[in-house]
Amino acid sequence: MKKKVVALTGAGISAESGLKTFRDTDGLWEEYRIEDVATYEAWTRNPALVLDFYNKRRAQLANVSPNAAHLALVKLEQKFDVQIITQNVDDLHERAGSSKILHLHGQLTKVRSTQYPDLVTEIGYKEIKQGDLCEKVPAEAHIVWFGEAGSAD
Image 1 (cartoon, rainbow, N blue to C red):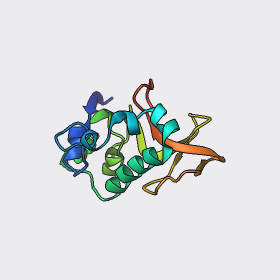
Image 2: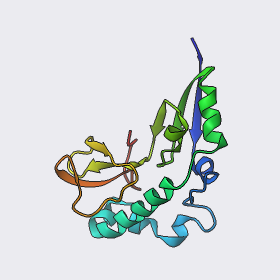
Image 3: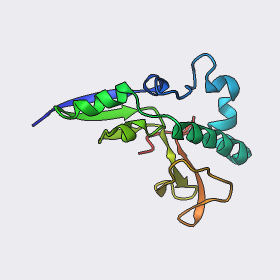
Image 4: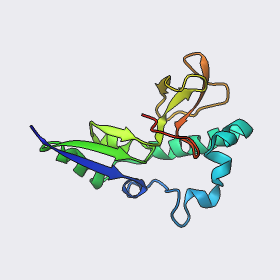
């Protein structure tokens, strides 16, 4: 039986791939207010702005690749039972080849039903538009917003 390794990852690992972080100097929170794009209230108040914010994150994600740190975690799987717990909403761990990943804050490449939160669909890197559906029900980004509890996985 392989020994277990748990890796906790956050913005730093994906910043090396070229993804803009939220809190760094020149980060996303300097361009946007959290209350305007990352809360349920923002979604109900201005869904077009929230969708645009996450569509831009998804478009940026489509143009970057996993880096050496992502690949090193995959290599660890050859000798250890590796579980990755990440705060990141990107799919760089998956694209690198890691097999056990828990996304605490959701995933950019998925949408969820506005009425049935357990109903989640993979969309890849395409835009979400107002009126798009997730299994015949209005869709929203599969993101855990500020003020929400729990993991999105």
